[in-house]
Amino acid sequence: MSVCALPSERLRMLGWTLLLIALGLNLRPILTSVSPLLNDIRLSAQLSVQAAALLTTLPVVCMGLVALLSAAVETRLGEGRGIALGLLCILLACAARGVIADGTLLLGTALLGGIGIALIQVLVPGLVKRQFVGRVALAMGIYSAALMGGGGLAAWLSPRLASQLGNWQAGLAVWIVPALLALLLWWRAPWRMSPAQPAGHTVQTFMRNRRAWLLALYFGFSNCGYMTVVAWLPAYYQQLGWSSQDSGSLLALMTVFQVFAALGMPALAQRMRERRGLLSISLVAQLLGFAGLLFQPHSAPLLWVALIGFGLGACFALSLILSLDHVHDPRAAGQLAAFVQGFGFLINALAPSVSGWLLERSGGFHATWQLMLACNVVMLGVTWRFSPSSYWRIFSNQRQRSSH
Image (cartoon, rainbow, N blue to C red; front, side):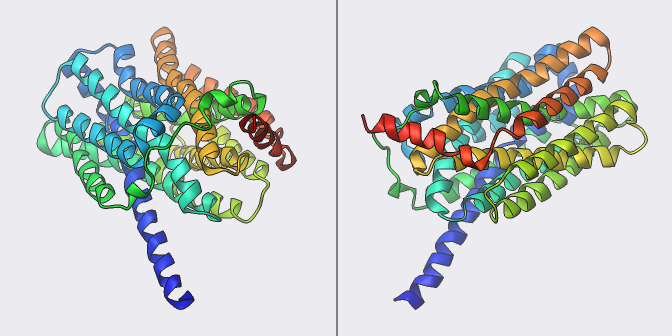
């Protein structure tokens, strides 16, 4: 029995890993396919700079708001139907982008796609905590790497398709394909084993917990550089004379290093309980990269983008792992991750708009990169508050509350 069980367990883990990759690949093309084509989209759809920024801001707002309603989502839909609905929303948003050019309707697709992304993101941490017992850090690394890989592929491929076909809409609509494939794979998965469940832990449970708020702020500010870079890095280098394809390639290169960090750093984290050293390394990498964009953008753009990508990839995966470390129960851990992502993504959503406002006021990007440097310096100081000996506080508080 034990001899047969081993291959069966390996096949089960392989199946869930493939599904995790398929889900992750669909969570960023809605954002990153827009960025290299933003100038063409603005001219065609007659959008202002601030309105164009909403194409990346609206999905992130949805990620935050839906995450805060995650208990209701899990109770009403369950994991299976919730993730299926999320993939369907992404699929419909990508399909709509292939046939419309109206600015208002484009913003509607950003909203629809953001709801889809949000539904998946709030349900995946609980799935990982339950299906990958003893391998949570590694599984979150694989998921984060797939998520970032999809974003980088979209940044590289979308402007090339748009150029080949002479139509920016084609560069956005192509992402219907991975959404459809993931939906078919998910529909055949044994997700029915996880039906809708009665409400237990909710996001509101953590509202009075200082550590939960600190984790949310940390996730938001240590990762806000991603939304800023996705929204404005291609535009920055286009302002310096680069083409849309070359500037999009910078985002794709950044993703290579994001994926490397999202896989490598959690693999290191799997072997230790202490996260502060790895988180500090990731923040220092971001600091060096943003300093390079600010002071020497022409001298070594590939190096600056690589450092930023490495830092962001590690920060996203490690800050999620840090949240999951605090609670043992899978449902409670999922709700804590939802709380952290909810408020964290609302902070992230401000980054493109604040950067757009700074751009309109100053006419350049220096203030944006200075803001990112300031965020990283502050988060470096906050990192050292997350001693492993303090993890018990949230778990203890939730256990006491649930016992009443």
